[in-house]
Image (cartoon, rainbow, N blue to C red; front, side, top):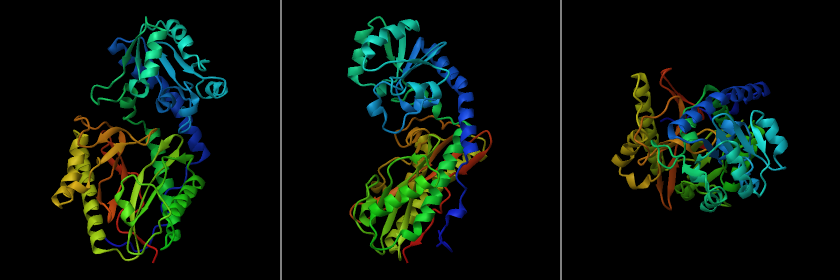
Length: 415
């Protein structure tokens, strides 16, 4: 790694998406839903079930078009839940969501369900001739499962679990393989994040607090084209950077310390995720060495992926990629300072399949797909370094593309 000749600026990165881009993506999504539903129905037929009960907002958006904002499921009740049968799609929506559901899910039948799931479920299941129903069991409480069983004991409920990735459902496994327009939106979200961090750099100086910088970065994301944040901004200075998922506080930035940002934008439902560890003033020898190590671990993992794609496959498994990065860090004596996985898929959710960790499924990565590569080294009470980038991989096209383009080398600010 070498010191950059100049700090990056927003103009170095792609412009935000236009209204025409958004309209095109919406049209592409609607056109893609029949094929998405067909894949789900094929799994239903193979499993011998008559219907699929979905509860995750991401899956509902993917299959029906109904959009619930982040966290809205906490107040929506069962609105947004959906049932797919062999020939129908039913979306639950109480009076607060009826108009929205009719607009966004025009190909579905809207059923008014509001606090009366126990009463409506037998009727809905019977109307679909559903005697055996697959359920997104990992996202339904035991109380709700019991309520459904008691309401319609003649309907058998089974968990929709993906055999290759225990604990995940059928739709999540399908979403791991990305359509071109999905990858476009992840890339657009990445570019917004790149521009926002570049615009923030002049604000970073000794004495400014983590909380102030996190708020400023959020403003830049929202005013720079993001519909929403992918997740809360993390800004962690000095020893706090040793917390992989810490929260910003009133701690001031110090000269000579690292400053870690973990953040992402959301564009038309799709998310970005990037971590950069910057240096405020002259870096210490220790922190430079750790940054070089983490960068080398990341480059080794990416290099292994690129070699697999150049060779025409097969793609490595998630644990294989994790081992490529982890072995570099272990060899340097910091194995115990890298506790989390090397990466995760991203799309309609910030964390989704595929998983790149030691305990991930030992199956080849899907293609086309997009995921993070984010090794880190964390020294409790001292410092922490993580470098995270999103990679898009398309084996058939022979392509590995890094979607996060803010420099990942040494960036010194606040001088």
